[in-house]
Length: 457
Ligand code: F0G
Image (cartoon, rainbow, N blue to C red; front, side):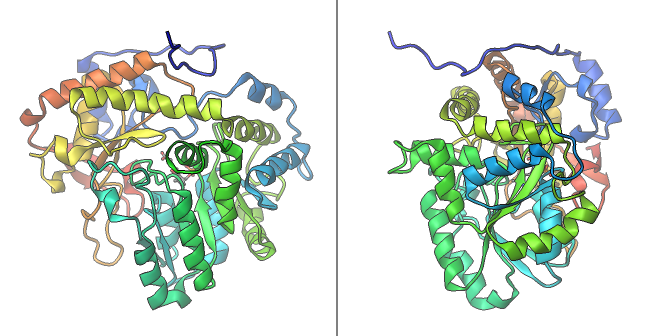
């Protein structure tokens, strides 16, 4: 008999989980103004809010922590990290930052000016925030297929070359760079093909533009290329990563995802002028160039994490757990962004709660219902997160309204996946009884989802 697939690790340390009653959860979510970001973690049983900084480090990473060099300048841990990044990406210049959005802040301070246009594939909310707060515009050129959650295509995160070319043909002089997010988080953790990265490069070259990869989940992207794109099945994950980055000029990175650490980020580039420009903002915002907001020990752990995650066994274990959960949802007939992405399941809330009007935020409503059902915390990637249009101040209802259930790396077992799926099925089974959603009673101008206050209707 063929042996089943199993995790490429065993567990050395455990952390207790707390369960609660439905009554407690109803009270807690009300006190949190129906915003799941405002819950305390011990009010949550299984936390699928994010895969960002929530993973478990390996024994090798913990061992590296002990060897961290905390020197203010010239830390050995920085050079370990820099060498690892250069080996994986080919980028020579590296600036550490405290997390991904800090990398955006530092690099965009140098590159984005008022009136600029930054085309890309579904910019992540912080990326969009850092563009719009500089009075510039993020233009989404994602392929239309990404909007149809039921369509099974292998690379739904792709940039539509026609849309990208149209932006450049019309307004090239306003474009400081193109940004490609791998994987495309907002569209459902969907990968971008190598072919597409090549096409983006060709268009960029035609107009003399540079390309940045927002690389938070670049290893997951490489794994999908390995499993889905012709010609890559016999390559190593590291070889695939190297080729992906060969089509970019630089990257911003949230190390909290595919770096397998709990905090950290960096900028890496092949261009000295970008490095010089970004340096000026790193020092006042983040810190000196050889730590940029990170502890020496955290840089040491990140170097190991990047190396470890770019090995097939590690990334395969990770993505296959997400696929395990998706298979359960298939069994129950619950619609989600298909095929499932690398880090999360994105339930199509518009389809599940089809009686809740858009203006009452179906995905947020579904997130609240799931929490009350079983203490499973997901998050809305939808109309609340989309913020208001900076010009008209209207809500943006043009995109998808999804409930994201992120899977932390190396944290939960497949038994937990079974619980998540069963909880979701219970909500799904009573979906026709859910006809009203929520209304916003307080919000901020940008990135309102973190602090928004809601009332249940
Ligand atoms: N880019 C992408 C694609 C992301 O998913 C994130 C963060 C960032 C940039 C910003 O990185 O958090 O280190 O500052 N995503 C988290 C999430 C928050 O839950 O998806 P950060």
